[in-house]
Every structure is written in C-alpha cells, then in structure tokens.
Image (cartoon, rainbow over all chains, first blue to last red; front, side):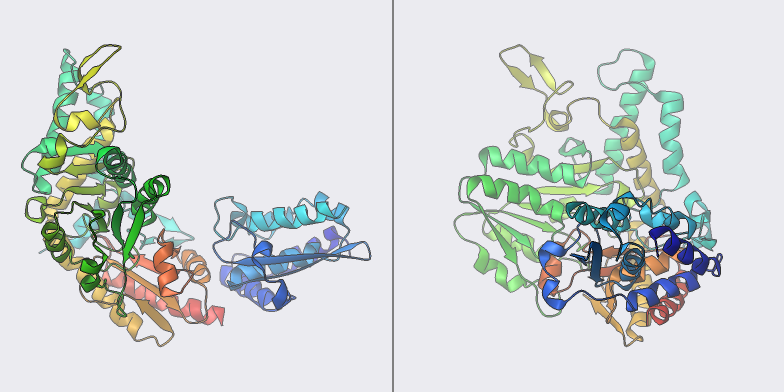
Length: 137
Length: 405
C-alpha cells in the first residue's frame, strides 16, 4: 500500500468515532499497545527524540530499498501516536517518506497534537522520521 | 464566612468551556487566574492615566507616579516591610534572583566559595548560582531530603564551612507543596552570620509572609502566581543590603547625576529599577494584593489547606496512586503518579475533561532525580477552587486510569 492509501484507511477508521474523543483515544492507546517494539538494545540515548515530555525512541533501518521504523515510548498516548506514524511511513521508500504531507492528522481530528508547543512532540517525531529517511536516499 | 460564589464571579476565565466541559483550573502553581479588579486596573491605567513616571511635571505623569509609589506602599505593607524603599519591582522571581546573584558575584562571593541550596529548588533558584559557580570554581551544597520528603534540617550545620557565603532556599516546594521550616534555617544562618535568600514564589500566594519577623536578607516573588499580571515581581532587600548590593542593570531614571566619566546613583529601590518600569503591571500587582487582603491571606491558607486535605484523602483511597510529600500542612500543591502510567498520559486525558493539571518535572529536575522519577502529575489550588471540583477530578481520574488499562 502507498502512504496515501494507508492514510485513507486510517481516516475511514477514525470517521466512526465522530466527536467521541474517548473512543478515539482508546483507539490510539490500543494502537500504542500493538506498536512493533524497538529492540531493547536499541533503546539508547542517541535514539531518543528530543522535544517530547515522555521518552520516545526511534530506530530506522533500510531493508530492500524500504525504510523500516521501530519505536517505543514510556507514555502510552505518545506510543499510540508514533504507532500511527509508523503505520503510515514504515515499509515505504525514503523518497516517498520525505515527500509525505501527513495532512491526514488534521483529518482525523488530532491537529492540536501537531502544535510545536505540544508536549508529546508529534511534530518532532515526524521531523525525525523524515530526517532519518533523508539520510538513506 | 467566605463567599466562594462571589469570589468565583470575580474571575471571568472560570466561565470558559474546555472541550464542552466546565474549566477546572488546577494549575495555579504555574500561574493563577486574575480577578476582574486586577484586569480592569491595568486597562484603566492605559485608558485614564498612561504616562511615564518620575520627574514628569504634567498632571498625568504626576498621577501615574503617585499610583506607582502607592502600589509600592500597598505591596510593602502586605509583606510587613517598614521602609518601602526596600521593595524593588522587577520582572518577576527569576529576574529578582538574577539581580541578587549578579550583585553578590561582584563583591560578596569570592572564588571557590560555597552556597547552600535545597533539593526542592526550582531551576530558577539553581541556575543563576550555577552560572556563578562555573565561572568561579564555586560549590553548590545541597540540603538533602529525608525519607518523608521533608528537608534534612539536621544536615545543614554539616554543610556549612568557612567558605559558605549564602543560603538560597525556597519557602515552599513548587513540586511538593511542602513548607520549608524557614525559622529553623534562619536561626542556623544567623548563628553563622550567613545571608539568606528566600524564594517566595510559592509561599506568597498561599500563606502570610511577614518580612519584618522573618528578617531575611533577600526575598523574591512573582505577581502572576498571586492573582496579579505576568512580567512583574518583587525583590526585597534588607536594610543592610539596600545600599551595598551593586547594580547589575543600569540605565535611565536611576541616577542623581551622570557625566561621561561617572554616575552618582539614586538612593533606595530606584537604583535597581532602570528604564521605564512595568507601570501597569505594578498597578495590577498592587490590586492583586488588595484582592488577597479583602479575603485575608490566613483565610486563603486555611481554605486551601482544606482543599489539599480533601484531595489527599480521596487520592489515598486509590491504591494505584503514589503521592509525594504527603502532609496536612501544605501550601496548595499535590504531586502524584499513577502506578505503571506516565504522567503525560494522565494529563492529556484529563485535559479532554476540561481539567487543567501540570505534568512533568515542574522545573525541579534535581528533585525528580532524587525521587528517582521522571515526573509527576501536579494539581495546585487557588482561592476559587472547590471541593466539588476535586470530587469531579477524582471521578474523571478514575475514568482516565480505566481508559489507560
């Protein structure tokens, strides 16, 4: 699936919740629980993304021309957010990752998490994932 | 009897809805909300009296100067300062501590000297001293915690050497709400003739502070935590330091005479207030003090103590809650964690119910390191908070914990 196709799938998934923020967050939390976890020996300080109130570790691999991300966080909502990003961007070509507009975040009603002052650092996560992809082009 | 409904009516922001819920504001230790009297005093100043203070011959300037100096009297009276010239208006607590640190670095602190701080300190009462220490091979000695998270007062004597030059300590821990036994520290300091800087950022909003009685060398606090505007605070200097502390900032308005070669500085507080001060902020500050005095600071303390006791009791009933610095004698602040959950998750979900709490290290990373935690959820109260709000918060906290499981 392309990034756009996955985004479309997620938008449809979130449409069910409407204004029900509780169900939306429960879904994010569930996604956090199913995140492909980063190997324990990769949870090093140099893999911590700065700008988050909780610790977020991100590991990037290039396998068969595709970027593979694994991540973890000690806060479950943050973990859910990053799971969402991994779902969209992992297993894609580096060029496509760098170009991705990530506009789906607005469409699933999580726009406020993109603010630069937001303590969960969703913006820092995306920047870091793109930066790591760019290094591998 | 205090009329809580009448008090709440004075805070327009409390009528706001957050995510379609009533706003419950439990982040008062970060900044308190402002009563209408404070808000209007600031806009009234710009509508009716705006003019630069000092030296003006015209009526407006005289009126503005009078209001500014009257504000100094009002604030000085509140803290029981006899000579209002000992009260300097600054940009806030951080600014005040920096003025003292830079001043003392010029003549009081020598290379390799030592300063005593406590484990409670907010970064703003660590960094200015650390900056000096790094440049001068100075040493910061830290009063440790006991198992109950109170300070280990018995250790202070052991920390003092012939190189100790200052004790800089907070009156109330901004993270735990625990009140420092300042009388005990003062008596130790007096015995060794050590000056004391008392950080009143978290005490001034919640409890009586009598500077004549305490007789510390320096006292600092911010207006915005005590119902006043942001960007203004105070620095109190004891008579001994008033003429001795060198200025670290200089500029217009604080002189007797200036030539290109030399300057004769003004006496008293004016010496430390270069440039056009935050006039409207100072007027807002004095109106915040008037708001407090209309209720009575002791009444505020007793009321908030009841809120703390009620919230602690409710939290204690929840086995998954770990509280830090639990005590019935606190100044409006409770810090806790939920077992196996990150404070960030708790805070994010509570926000969706309109409940404003603070999560993280609260600018006290050394304290977090000592407690071996990354952060806490902090709830902090003000005079407009209610028992009902606490009950609603507890109900939603339970729901949030369920969601996270």
